[in-house]
Image (cartoon, rainbow, N blue to C red; front, side):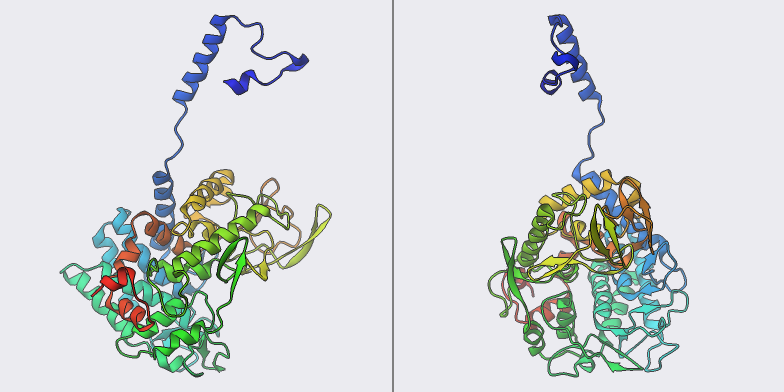
Length: 480
């Protein structure tokens, strides 16, 4: 009401001038009644419920009923991402806990998935198999479950699958035939992975292998999404790697300060999120990085990227306190377009990010970057969830939650290779990506209840892997 009376109308007269006391009272009463009858904004809990339920159904609805694989993306027809299957196995338990499906339904789906994975053919042949030495190919044909084209046998994507299987192993802990079979199947899946086979350079773990070219020339080195790879390799009950693998992995960590936040650097936010979907690093320390735990490191990286978006040095549209988040995601095209007199170079799918000495930013924002940071920085993640879902509406937030990416700066259809353009709001993806949907539902749950973290704390393999990596303190010091 004060704002209303403080606005000058035509001719400089205030709207309230000349009104009688009775008229003013009536106007105030109308204002108060309007406020009282206006629908209340959704609470944070209601908002997070909605995001989780929509995201859950990406995995539940789109799983292939024959192979039980999860698509890499949808609705564009695609192959399966083996990492997305790991996120799906995690989502099923969350769905049971939240009541999106019954526990029995979730258990049956989980068991069918694990048994299907165990039945897939393994071998060195380039065709007709799903994996080799316990590892799986990065992408599999949705219908046949065989290797897609010439993709690599992926150590990190296999690790994300195994992490989901171990979550299922510890979550489904009841004494009935289905849940007992889940535990046994998860154990078999993990036991057959021959982690040392991927160590062809002293103590390091290779990124992958193909029948045609052999082992990748790159190893997992330097802080990134592969902490989960090394921890699972260390924790293996059958084929563990030597504890020196942890120090070897961290030898090339890069430290710096970005927007006032000192931390171990990695530009795309997925590198700070993926391993921490399953492992609660709060309060546990290794002997490599003694300054802060990895949870705090991710919090600082997220705050730095948020500050970067607020300053917006490249002047992209809509960047600000509630519109932010750079990570690996879809993009509109690989082309340069002149916008507002300035040449802008855009990219299709790539890893975007911002940190000291490494800015990869074309104005494309991935909702998963901000949403999946909720376990580190809820104070900036929840406003971003609310703002993105309401400002852009169904352009961005629809049947299965958030589409993969959007770019408010690009508002032309020239040379567009993927997605669609709203001339008022910019470019929007048409697909959801499983590896970006998975962290959304899991990290929201970790923020709300700690379900995934607390479940994994009970898994002896994960505990073993952390201890062999040299972690001590916190909850790990209390584990058996």
